[in-house]
Image (tube, rainbow, N blue to C red; front, side):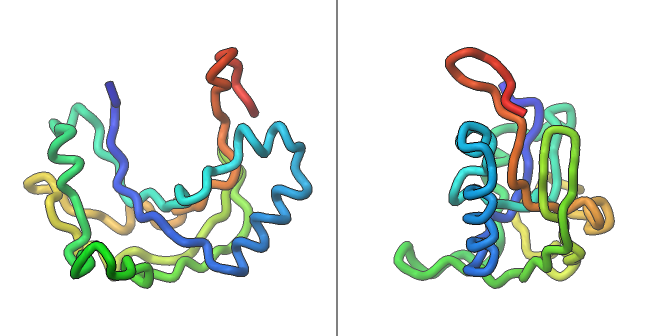
Length: 147
């Protein structure tokens, strides 16, 4: 099973960022891009991580949400919670990403379903928030790491 649960905000990269992502694809080795590029519709920023040792169950993790849901399934999902200002490359172990200097302090009170006594601490992630572009992944067929 999972060792941890991550609270993420999924983002729509927007036109300027999509153009940049397309240039990444055009300049990267095709095999590396295919295996390691962050999958479409999964671009996100991780706001917090909950380990299993914190006592969080799968059901509790799935119950965490933002308090302003769409009125019905056909409403446009609210994507303007934050505008993330991308500041440049971050080269982490196993990940090439874009950093941001955006603060999440304005949205931390908007989540419901957090474990009792737990609240988001914006200082915990400040300076660490990033949008992953390429990640180390295992080749499902061979088990080989793509880096």
